[in-house]
Length: 389
Image (spheres, rainbow, N blue to C red):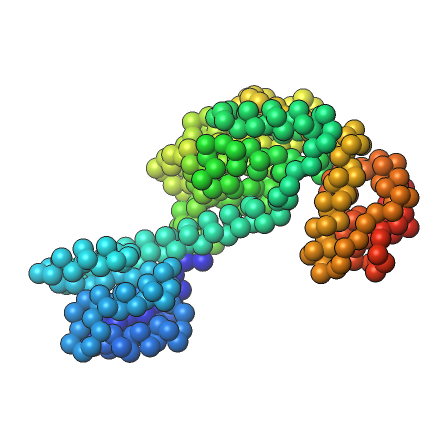
């Protein structure tokens, strides 16, 4: 979301009218106030993404004071201050206090529109980044269970690989924990303080995938009403995890190859290269050699993404992890469903160990969650575990 609602605060009626008409023509919702007190009252009463205020107003509460009050009430609100050429030092002070930008009076319509576009792009970027970071981490388990020798070896290797800049390819059946390992690598890398952005390549429609990856410029295609920042740009100085990378359309793979190899790309409709610093982690549940042979995956892209391969074993091949994982998921789902302590009976443990787990760790979590939701007893018995035989 960019800028939608704007508050204009100025004691000159002509300025208020001129600005309001200009912004309304851009499709924005505008409200006006004739002094700082009225502006502050409106701001506290309603939600505005942007406030444009004059610095010097005759009545109480100057533009600087209004800026301070706004930032104290909601630091995320963007503020543009208006000032005359002779008082440019006021604009410098306002920027120091957190103003987004300033307008020098007298100003042109072009100057206003340019600033509004910049403010809208900034607001949209902050919103998208916050949202993407949230979804990137909200479903990742905080604990990794590794009692088996195979998983202990993988975790040890992952922590070493994390310190490098190499691209990593995670392979394994669906539900084996590729996302968890990708996040582990990021949090133990030198990019830990940067963004961690996930893209489920199989979940995004083919027609939208290029825009999701690289963004687009305003007006570049029907429906592109504003500039959009893509996932590569959002992951700058951090890690980009491409989940199910073999689902990317073949026609888009050359542009992806260039972005990975050169660390630059153009947005859709753009002509200026965008340079990024992104560490790539990819995953797939396919046989990658077969994907190349069947022309699903370009061979040159494969070699670029598969610098360091990590293959995760299925849950059936790491039996030592099944019960510790089941106990972890039991504790987690009991907490999420506000239920008291439970434990597994001997028969339930035996049933868990005997099952082949075609859905791997994800299936184990779902089975335990179902048992917690449906069962009210003090323990989880074999009959409470609904398995696909």
